[in-house]
Image: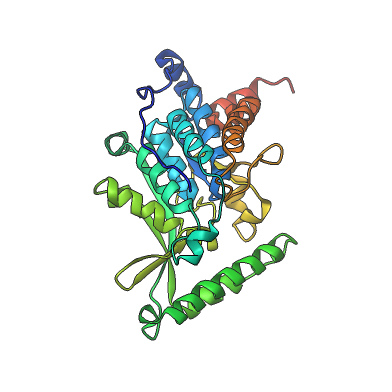
Length: 334
């Protein structure tokens, strides 16, 4: 059985940032950016590391979006608890020997340890006061379902909803990998009376609400249970849009982190062209739902920082203000 103990870590201290450097950058760079992290379970620690490195340059995350685990990571960045949160998750993962417990399953209990560990990490990493005081705009994508024909009263119908949605998503992912346009998942969503929902910072009434919003976006049965409130049910936002770029202003500087090219299939090409999009420079050392691989968690996070550092010149070029780019163009010899 996993041991999920509470323990003390060193006091949280944000990385120091040079105020002088920040002011200087603000003259020629758009140093207030939009930052998006795709869902991907443990892979999202890569996005956390990337964002941590960006912040160390003096860049400010004024608007953020996240889907599923990506939502937890962008709020961790705003909370300024990146290093402590990775250490916390490493610790509980190290004490979890397996991803499925047969003894629990045969007792009729929850066989997957993921949800309990995920909730503990969210509670540790979210600093409610910092999130509110930051003034950052937040967008968290999820799917809300209102099952028809009183399906909420029928366990078989709910199981069918989950199975149909999962099957459609897997088949769509297969076809997107071939560069094909797909609509199976959307058809299932229409049949089950589902709609996409964006939660924002305006919904953050208290830490419990923030935790539940993240869980709504992360609901992927049977690993993370089907979240519901009365007759409202929620599913993982990645089923329809795993990288929420569309919520940001049209002229903003946007940096988006994702892990597979299939994430971008079907998105507006003009939107993608004006964003700085990032995928890992090499395969990540962890799979989405491997909650036994503490070493992989740390390496994914460090790889995110490393990739950001190696991309620094290209990122700063992207962030240059228009007048700077025009001046540089005029200064070049004809």
